[in-house]
Length: 105
Image 1 (cartoon, one colour):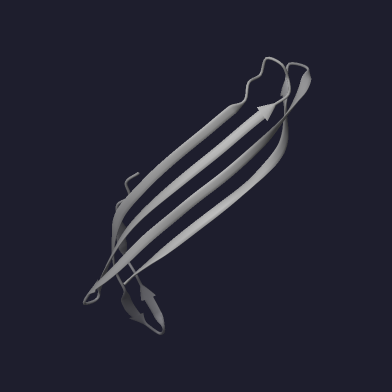
Image 2: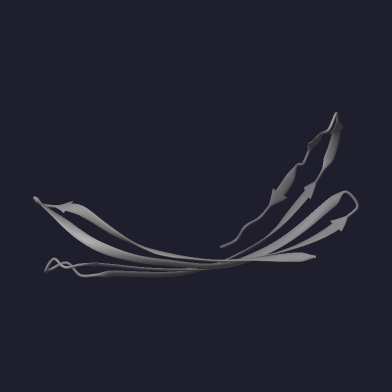
């Protein structure tokens, strides 16, 4: 069995920064698109999970001050990795769950 978690977010901001003795105002538009897929396999008391995710970020900033250009940033990231865990019941409704994982981006 597995699951997929897609997510989309976007927004804009009006910011300012000090440059020399004056304030510079700039507008920024941002967006994030992301999906994450996870699969689980059980082997007795052990659980193996494999996951993969893709993220895309787009950001654009612009100002009306002469001599200062706009800035555009785009980034795509792929991450994959396994995780191994085992739940150990310790009694009285408590448990301990040691795990190990490896992530690569």
